[in-house]
Length: 285
Image 1 (cartoon, rainbow, N blue to C red):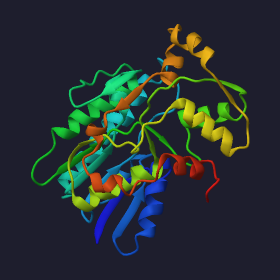
Image 2: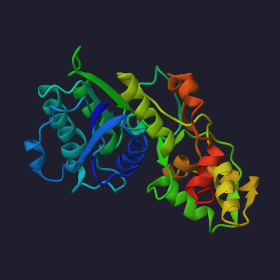
Image 3: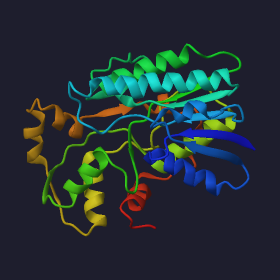
Image 4: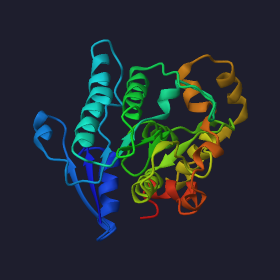
């Protein structure tokens, strides 16, 4: 039975991981701890085989007043937890990073793409990665996950914003872009595989299928019994705009399939894109 410590009692990913571990009766002995104050420093890590560090700051608007918070939480806190884990004999450390470390609004990301973050969120995550990777040795394995947009039932972030739009707008551009996304249950499947196989390295998890914003909005509308018309002539307005927000929504930003396919058998267990949206929208409970 593997003993796992999860940081982040209130995180969406943490709660989802807890639910999956509960379902795997007898395979995992786990504990979730909060890092909101310094009491965690007095908690012993000695009884654990792995730490899954999920705590992080995201989904808030970056300002001059909160920029330092990103580094304190996403970088410094992660490093503190990892140092404690290593010194107390934990053998594996999983860190939730992000696609944001690449600093791109559009493009295809492959093994040769150099990280160049542009936000405090992305910079703090990449700096944390570098600190953690330098801690590796034969007795301390580090696994870093760089997920793209994570979505699922009751998730927050870009998916929820797009879903709200899909339920109210009658018209939508018919742009055929490609986006990397990952359904929460597929991400948890990857995390479990890394724990079970005691893997280390950098991972770029994504759904088996690329996602088109057009297809996503159309499916959400259909599942909510809303009629939406896809108009190709709206594409010109998007293509001629230099608006970064529009680029984020309608541009192509994806990991290559080769970058994500570290375990082909694992992808066969993934929930399909269409079923994942049905589950997210509560139409396949």
